Image 1 (cartoon, one colour):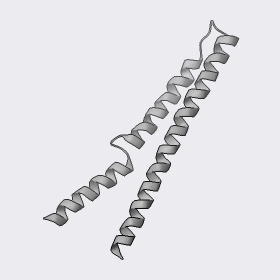
Image 2 (tube, one colour):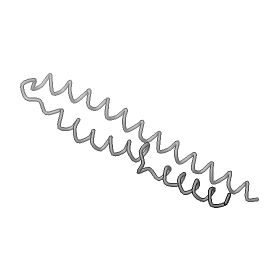
Image 3 (tube, one colour):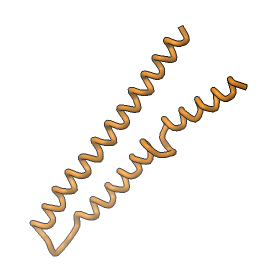
Image 4 (cartoon, one colour):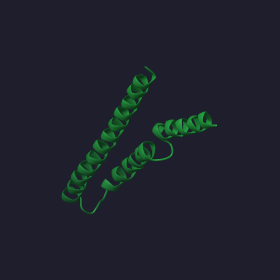
Length: 93
């Protein structure tokens, strides 16, 4: 019974992780596509006055923050894994 419950929890965590990754990659793809379009619009309509880099820079900051949450030390997944590691070490003692 405990193994089934643990397997369900592992499945739910894995599914949540896949969803986080999917959302990040969708964010990354939209960032790239939209910024390519903005660069093109900017260069065609007003090549002497560049403004696209503002959107690219600020959205890029948001994208970096998203990446840190998904892949970095601030992600919930990492926190949960660390908690599990510590709990397993405690059980072995």
